[in-house]
Length: 227
Ligand SMILES: NC(=O)c1ccc[n+]([C@@H]2O[C@H](COP(=O)([O-])OP(=O)(O)OC[C@H]3O[C@@H](n4cnc5c(N)ncnc54)[C@H](OP(=O)(O)O)[C@@H]3O)[C@@H](O)[C@H]2O)c1
Image 1 (cartoon, rainbow, N blue to C red):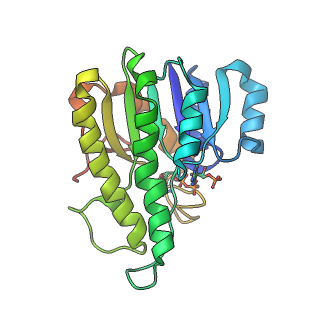
Image 2: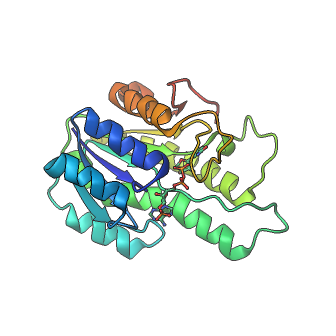
Image 3: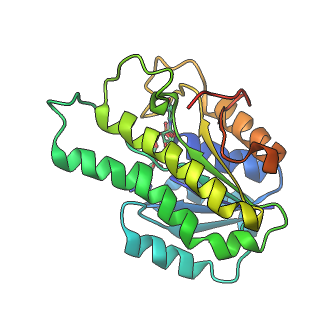
């Protein structure tokens, strides 16, 4: 099995990379920081099983370059994990921060997936997991400390819906996932879920996905979430 994980140098992305390597998968770790110590250490331990590539998901040219570096490569699972959170309500969020958040959290996953469709088509069981958040659920919305983040993840959920229907004929499963409230730089130190627990749940879910799951929203325990 071969996976691509974006935002793989720290947080949940790094934990997913570690979990998949432990399970014997080949991993392409995509990151803005290919020289990160966290990934260098894994490379020393896992050698050929881990490939590290540069990507900035806010930059379409960088995504295209990444995709070119994977030409001809089979990709079974794409973990669209990279994300940013800039705090602020509708009055104190700057236009630039809102736009940047949409680029990273919404347009990034769409464009990475689109750029890797030929790689996914080569797989017998291709899957895309878009890392959303419960904060992007319109049904359960009860307030937010970041309007840009909440809107970007709600929009990402619609990207999932549209991609799921348009990639169905190729047999590509597309889901949104909520990784839990996780103890990372983004989640903060009060978060109850450890990155390792979240990554284990996400890896388990990725191994179970079939066409019956496509176009749906799950948390890291496999429980379905309302859009
Ligand atoms: N933690 C939570 O409680 C929680 C809850 C719900 C959803 N999520 C989602 O889970 C995902 C991972 O979150 P996390 O908690 O691990 O966050 P994190 O600790 O802040 O890590 C974010 C990762 O995304 C990468 N990234 C950010 N912008 C990027 C860009 N333009 N191009 C490439 N990589 C970029 C970062 O790389 P750099 O080191 O280069 O910045 C880092 O590897 C995000 O999509 C987040 O929205 C997290």
